[in-house]
Length: 146
Image (cartoon, rainbow, N blue to C red; front, side, top):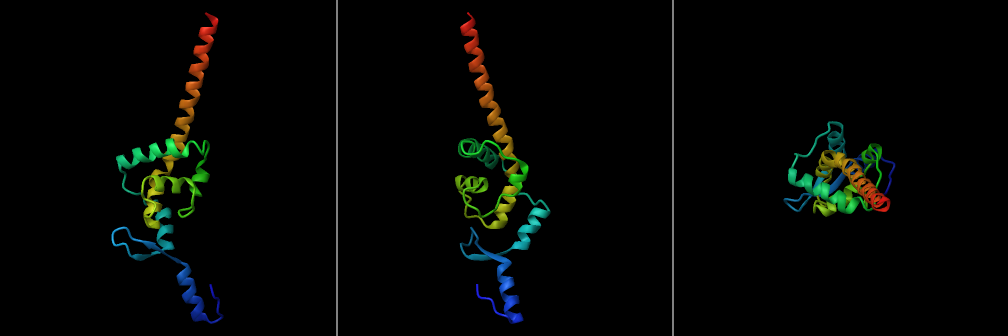
């Protein structure tokens, strides 16, 4: 970026920095998404409409693709997930659900709706594995004692 000292240049470059260009899925043209819109979505907790099919796919994706890589995560880490960063939980979800190319506003609403599922599914999966290990150990103890 070129920085000039004139006030008009500072105004024009700051307005460009406050906006991102994203692709609108319907028209396949570039539309301007203002960062203040994304901030408003997070501040007002604007969620995507709940869809049971998407919920099932989110839970399946977490079990199959995220759990093998991530076993422990807290709400603070989930709150800090970046919308455009690659190889994070959100990126994996969007990639597997074929929603990777949604604009930032749709990504924000999606993440607000389904981020709670990440820790819930990871915890449930860890419990399933621990219970399975206990069962195997317990059955082994029974066989050994007979």
